[in-house]
Length: 211
Image 1 (cartoon, rainbow, N blue to C red):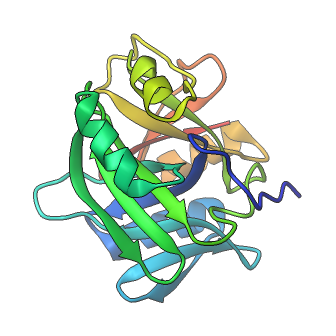
Image 2 (cartoon, helix red, strand yellow):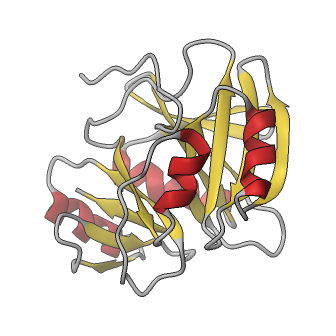
């Protein structure tokens, strides 16, 4: 079981879903991945086998449903300043997220949304790389230099996807074809053109990948 207790600055450490239809999305992802949901203060923690594997909240009015990648950051205030210096924008934060740490949400110069997490203790998702948990993240944009200049780590980049600039979350499966078929049965659409994954658009338009 791949257990993660520490993330270096710039590494993806958290992922959450911004829902347009929270009840419908919980039903969709709960059946697809076997997830359960534990709510705390209007935000849900997604669990699998008793371990937290993602977060789950509602998107602000006017924004689309989406999966959001968060990068580990040693100092959210310094990152916010540097994001602006490098041509990005701050959407909200830095702000406290309970007792565990501080969160910043931003856009890079290409317009891809990305979060940053400053943890007060060993931070991030503990269980990853197992079926039903995230196993990789990919930047669908040509903006790797921004992240290298910001935190010293250049993400894996894929250009020419035809989609808007965004971070793509990859979820591990025991059987990619069967999980893709289940997603389609639940109302999603799939596009198997990626060289190592099946790209899924959920019923509310949010993209994610199956491996």
